[in-house]
Length: 431
Image 1 (cartoon, rainbow, N blue to C red):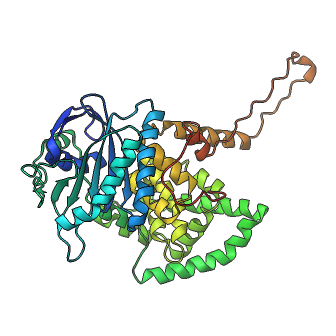
Image 2 (cartoon, one colour):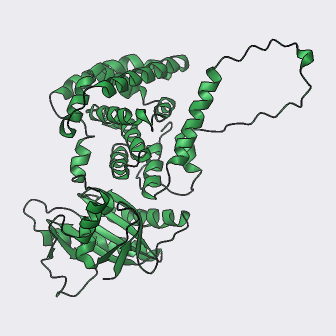
């Protein structure tokens, strides 16, 4: 196993040398910011010393029939995305993370996933990028799909290091970096309510839909709904911001209590309009960001059955605010869930790819600021010109410059071309 030097990512500029599969397996949560569950993780390596680069994660497809196509898409997404940034990977490391199923051992899990590992290695090799290491992590043990030596990689696997005892853990602790639990725990903060309140929220969504959908389909009514949606969202953000500070473990519960079923339903349905969603995306920095993120999380939890697909809008907004404020792990989780409920949601696709490629969100922030400033400028009254026209010097009329599209999708698309995050169905109109 080659040595790898990490000079970027969660631990900042500190350089770390990882020696062998054991330290590589232990480093995964620090590379991602959480412990991935049921996930394929691919990490690009650059240069002769194996500097970590772009990384992506996808849930392991349940059907083995999907493995071949998913492997090809993942390999192309990581390699082509790195090329667009001017850094073609010199190698790739693959992780397959899945706990044993009921009645299954870790070794059996590893063998069951071996065909997927081989598909991924073949897909990367077809694009002339070798897979330096492919690891399976299951039940606190790891296996190498690349090393045939049973002396270092026995069939029963190797026990992973105790949490917090590795070189990566020490470096992360020194840098103040913490792993925020498992992927399941992070997703649970964004998933629909499964309590008795779900029925009340469904009734509110049914009632709001009957009232708002006809208005949204009408041009004049759509503008009224947009104005009401954004106004209500601002009031909810203010309510959340002014509420007493709660412990992290109780913050989501408190936020849920601050929002009524009818209020949540009205904003959720209003955000289905793309222009309304794009204006809401402007609350991505400064004092607005924290309360906006808490609101989008709370609304994501209110998208109960059969309205799960409506969560794509608040989940994408939560991912965008997380990315904009420097929380890349949180962004990846939220955007991944958005694509799970609606694989064709264009804004989530583009943000997910941009975040995975390590692009700077400032490009999109600048676009949204410009759109907001232009909109505010259009609403300002023109100054009263009292001087006679004859006094003004003659000037050549300037040609009006078009601002172009300021939609978030347009801002991200200008940075790249080609395919976006893996999806099995096309983009929907207005998404």
